Image 1 (cartoon, rainbow, N blue to C red):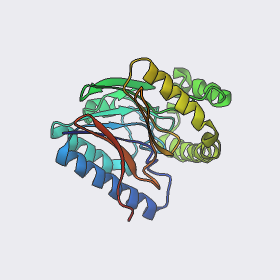
Image 2 (cartoon, one colour):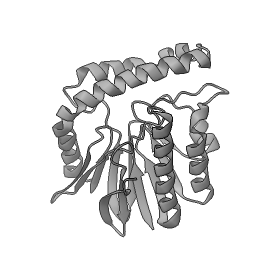
Image 3 (cartoon, rainbow, N blue to C red):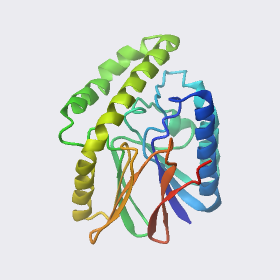
Image 4 (cartoon, rainbow, N blue to C red):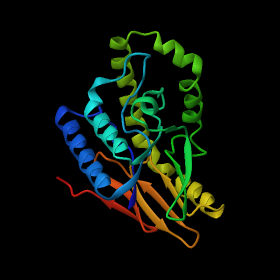
Amino acid sequence: MSLYIFSDAHLGCGTPDEEAGKVARIAELLALVQKDGDRLVILGDLFDFWFEYKYVIPKAYHEVLFLLRELTRAGIQVDYISGNHDFWMGDFFEKHLMIPVHRDSFDFTYDNLKFHLTHGDGLAKGDGGYRFLKRILRNPVNIWLYRKLPPDWAYPLARFVSGSSRNYTSRRDHKFAADYAAYAADKLQNGYDVAVIGHLHIPVIDRTERGIYVNTGDFITHFTYLKCTNGVVTLESLAKP
C-alpha cells in the first residue's frame, strides 16, 4: 500500500475549461489512491477559496468532495492540512467527509518514516508582511464579522481578494525557496525522516544524509505528488494531457 500527498490545486481560480481539466486530474490521482493507497494527505490550497457558513458551503466543488467521500467510505485515511487559501474551514470536512483538518502542520509515521508536513505560507523569515496579514485573517473576531456578510456578497469579494493574493505570492515566493529548504533541513536534523512542504508551486525532491525534503509542487501546471511505497519516497507527476 502507498501514501499519497498533493497540494495547491486552487480549484476555482481558472476558466471553466481549466477547472474541468483540474478536476479530471484530481479524479485521476484519487483513482490511483483508491487502487493501491491506504492514506492520502491534502497539503493545503485544494481550493482557491473556502469558507463555511453554518448552513452553506461552496457548491462549485461538489465533484471533488464526492470523490473524497468515496475514499473515506472505502476505508482510506484522508487528512487535510489547511493552507493560506482554505484556512477558514469549519467542521464540514471532519463531520461530513470524515477527514480530519490540521492547522499549520501535521506529523505522523508511515512505513517507519517520520513525516513532518506543513503547507508553508508565512514560513519564510523575511516574509514579515504576510506573517502580519496571516494574524489578521485568522483572527476569530474578523472571521465572525465576515460571516455576517450574505454568501452571495462574501464569495465574489473573497475570490477577488484570493486571486490578487495568489498573483502577488506567485511573483514573490520563488525568492524564499532557500528559506523553505533551510526549514526542511532543520526538521530533518531534529529527528524527522521526510519534510514535506507545499505553497511554492515548485516541485522539489532533495535527498540528503539526514533525510528527504519534498515540495509537492502544484496541481495546476505540474500535477506532481509525493508517493511513499515500502519506505521509498518519490515525487511523481501525472502525464500531461
